[in-house]
Image 1 (cartoon, helix red, strand yellow):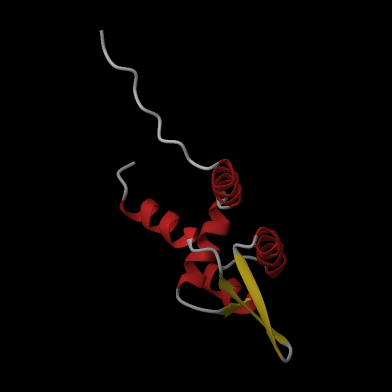
Image 2 (tube, rainbow, N blue to C red):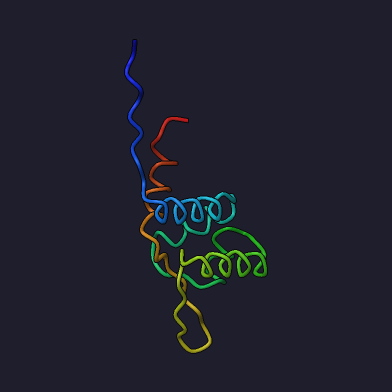
Length: 101
């Protein structure tokens, strides 16, 4: 008779937060945006130019990610600079790049 597998228990609040982040980053354009932000702060215009996406689309994605706490914004005059604030984003991007699919 085999032993039952031991399940590693992850705290429910951590699971909930991870699921929220994964769900939000489950969109290709959002993943591209956080890739741009990996290099440092960027404005909507800089992100738009880097990705060739319409400004309205970039703004909508950033608003959703900001609402979830994945990115934060800093105003400097007429410009708003976005940056990644959620450490799990770097881990997710590294996993996508290096994990076998």
